Image (cartoon, rainbow, N blue to C red):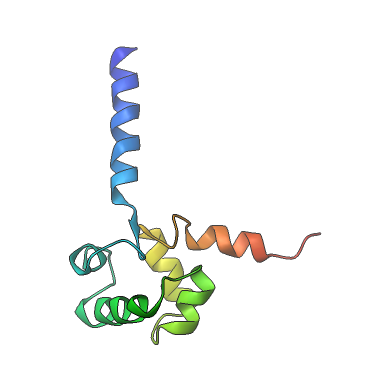
Length: 97
């Protein structure tokens, strides 16, 4: 039982450590996200210097080269905007049935 609890806590801490918030990360942390290289990290840092990203839609609107597909891939690799994954934004904007 003890090993199970320790394993679960270790897995949780690893998943939390993998999250990189675009509004708080330095350039090296941004480049640690799969798919983000020096060119895109520079664009993110430059655009963020004028004002923080409000949400994923704001990031997509302001950063050339980031569309819905890239946003989904970056989010799956651990990038967040204000602590939120891209999928959470998509679900929040989906029409109710």
